[in-house]
Length: 258
Image (tube, rainbow, N blue to C red; front, side, top):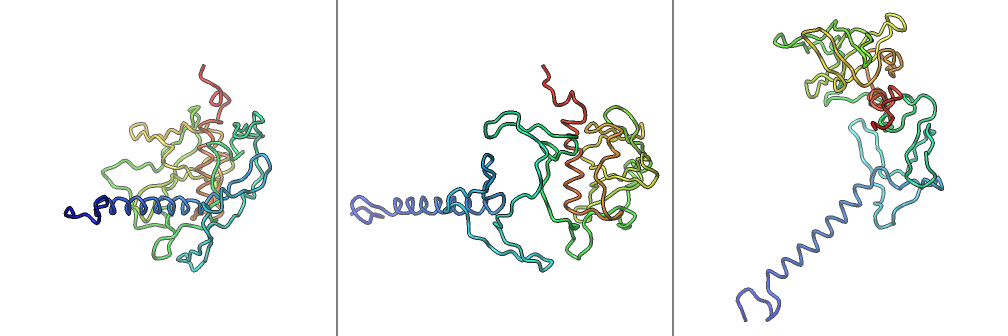
């Protein structure tokens, strides 16, 4: 018998290889089940009902205890309650959707968003994760950098949309998340949040350019219930509105280039 062999045709290396194949197959099966805890079961587009994709691939519900004490289950098989504000351009399954009504508020395409909890994100010590600097007073703008406070905000049409009146910071990562813009379109008290990802700041010209939406469209940016707080759901809606503008702000944007 050869050294390391169990029999004349099976050795230890072969057994280890087979064991690895079995382990890796089981790992893939486990991970593919776990990634179906959200978004499943699938919704049948034609029939309008929910359907599972095989009983073996949908995991049994698991209970998760959040830091707030709340307990949630996943998967929970909860359908999206929103009414679709769009219609299919073709009858076949998976056809593109055409917004119905104001495309900026249709909540489809680049303007779609997830129904996150309508509560604020919290830090480990229970404070709001995202807050304006008038509340998060331990944050300041570095003197080495320009200060965007007081800068004018321009839409894609170069129309002045408003003025920056405050900065909203992420307490957990010590970074800027939103500019607070006073539009003046509905009185001095009308303020909206502008995600920094949609901005191009010009410190020389003391201006901020936003290509996603037009100047007058800032008036319809979703607002927050509380002037000093933004919930996770409100963040989704705000960001989705600017995202919708990248395709629907003007009729030309949704048309082919050629």
